[in-house]
Image 1: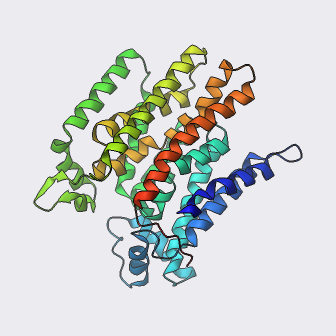
Image 2: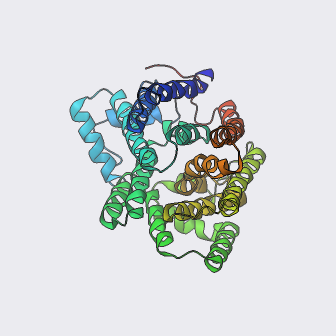
Image 3: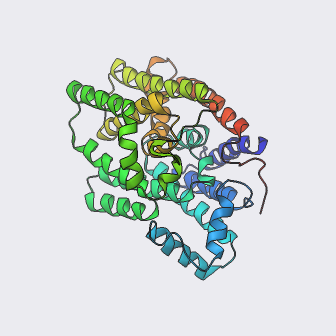
Length: 357
């Protein structure tokens, strides 16, 4: 368990080496940080992660069960097998591709890359990639598509989203980004969005059968006797709900201090805040439903930007703005470490102990 906490000092050292009075490079920091994270994930044994052995077993078989529901992943697996037929090759390839995609996303985000990388780990978005590799590849593609969408490069956005669907059907949720980007947000639309999120959360059972039918393979998250009733994770759900409330409160604080400091919202900030709002509200109301946990990642992932940008927003309240940023970041990071520690203690995804391949 302790080895996962060592990720932070290693990332910190990389930042100091790549950002100092003699040499400063955002690109170098992101490259070496995610090269390290990708290598760390790639070198794990197939006992680290519930799905790791499953991926390696399928990869080593002659048939390909992913050919129909995940054609892009099937092609990717074939390319990897052309390089190496070692079963661990798919684990390494998945890990490195995920690191590449998320590294590109964080590099392109207009926020402190050290903060976003730390929150990427402490908000528990890194370690789940040890299990749900196909969805994380899809998520990485969709997020980079979102950045193109913010630049109004719609063809690239749609192309990456469609490729993402080829890896995992949940990438269809990336189409929500397009609708959100087209709306001129005001009090009316925010009210409509809030009502919709609440109604969806309270009426999820009516939608669940449709969701399961639309997303191939997700019937495993429904009860065998009742497909329209999605399985729920009850272990430790109380603390999870409190943490989801904390995530929502951070967003509220972010919006409040943006107005309090008279800092205008950019289009990206407005869209990120809106998508994150959807994810946090539904998480508070229904965050213990397994299927929704997977889908909500496409919205809650934007928390890494909200958390990283909040110190920049609040530094105007301090006489020494640099010290103010560090104080706010330290408080937020410390609070997210509580959840990070809790998730490790529960050993979600069977990632403990970490063993080298």
